[in-house]
Image (cartoon, rainbow, N blue to C red; front, top):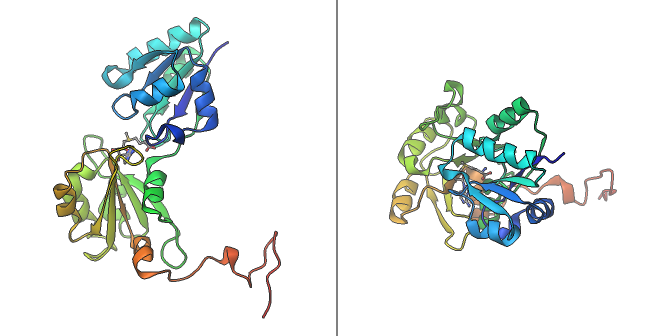
Length: 258
Ligand SMILES: C[S@@+](CC[C@H](N)C(=O)[O-])C[C@H]1O[C@@H](n2cnc3c(N)ncnc32)[C@H](O)[C@@H]1O
């Protein structure tokens, strides 16, 4: 009995899909892909012989019908999502439909754009004595956000924050972040179309990032990264991690006591 494989395509670069995801795509007879965010070229590269459907103009009922018919015909079926499917991927509702129809499926993770953006910046998101927490979030748009998760509310923590789906509301984002633990001097990076040929990265502070984003004419496929970890490349590290400290013993290495 065939099944549907939900696959994370990664942030854009066709080489950033997992080996398993690429193999399942190569074997696929039918691919339904999120055409608003996944490059058709990536689908052609990995699944040159598959019948391809772009879900951008389809409803949940329509995508489910394509998936269900392909499974019923015994075909290899892939539902391809951008980044990692578990982050703003709208896969839960698709899996619920497949459950209702008694269709089996698996989920193959992918590189979410937050981690591709950190790589583009050559930036660790968790630094000792600065922030040991990363919050992945968004501002409320047409999709509401629970009141307790308002940006202004979670900004009180002051952790590293990666904000998806929000760059078109950069001014509102800044206003809300300033109601929390951040200040006008807090560093911010905006990374657009990361790993695509037209990738753009703009850095600034909460005081000037909105103007810089506007000036760079950044489109909506962008992330906002905020937090003091971003200072490390400019000002150096506050502290090094214990993991490689010569005085620190752990399961795999005996520390040297001086
Ligand atoms: C519907 S969400 C999908 C997120 C995706 N599942 C992921 O894990 O990256 C779309 C948002 O992800 C972010 N995004 C996706 N790909 C991106 C990329 N290559 N560069 C920057 N941001 C990206 C943007 O914030 C965009 O508005």
